Amino acid sequence: MEKVQQSNEACQRGDFQAAVYLYTDALQADPQNCILYSNRSAALLKLGQHQAALDDAGKACELNPKWPKK
Image (tube, rainbow, N blue to C red; front, side, top):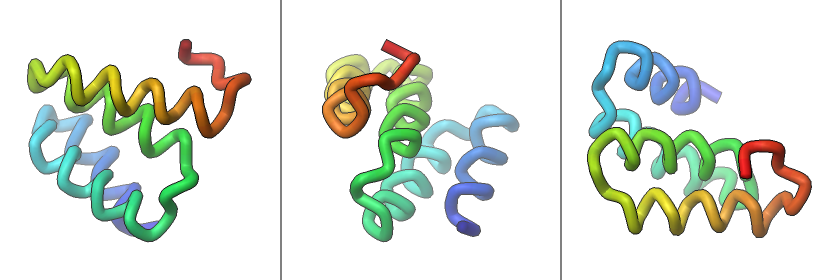
C-alpha cells in the first residue's frame, strides 16, 4: 500500500504531520488495521496530541487485543 510506505517515510524524516495525514488516508482504505492505528498514535504523540494518540492506541488494542505494543 503506497500510503503506508509514504507515511512510514514521513515518520522517518520527522514529518509527523504528514505521517498523520497519510495514516488517516490509509485507514480510510483499511479501517480494521491495528498497525496503522498504532503508527498514527506514535506520530500523534510526537506532535503532542496526547488524547488523540491515546484514542488511536486504544483502537489498536480493541482491534487486536493481543497487540504487543500495549
